[in-house]
Image (cartoon, rainbow, N blue to C red; front, side, top):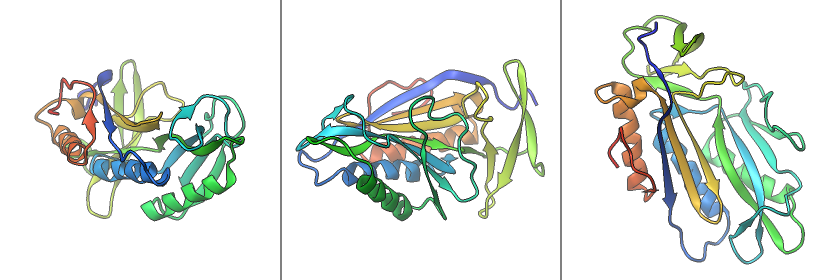
Length: 244
């Protein structure tokens, strides 16, 4: 199925920032804003978990610093049926894993509050998230003629052919699994959210089927970008394949 898509690891990488009030009440304000990104992208890409990195910020400010580091810098938030990562974190202490019955906003926010009560920073600093990255991504396929009725399909990425699972959701939509985490290939679409004294989103589209105008997949990505713009995420980079 070599014509299904082509691999474009530098196809489109867009960055967005989101303004916030000059005096936010707590870091939950930023975390709640970050969770809405997942909702805006839910028609394109859905995770089965999140990697959550923590950092230390200076008391009385929301200015992040590299040193000191928090006591538990890395948490995995996973659905009950999702295997833990075998490759992260690349160094440092092991991950703290929390399994959730569902990845609802309420469950994720409650787990974040739990982390803030457990993770510690030295005096003069407080804990807040540094990065949120989705794991176990599945990406929606709209033009399903080539894959109808199949549980998996071979996808040729450069010189490799990977057998990737397909699933049908309760609403009838079709979703394609990402390459294995040990694979060098990025998923069709991925994103991450950072806080480095400002909330920033990196959104990347890496396979041509989701990049090229005229496909149903491209239309879904454009719709998701429109939702981000409507939610006051401001583009910091120019797009070649999409309208911002």
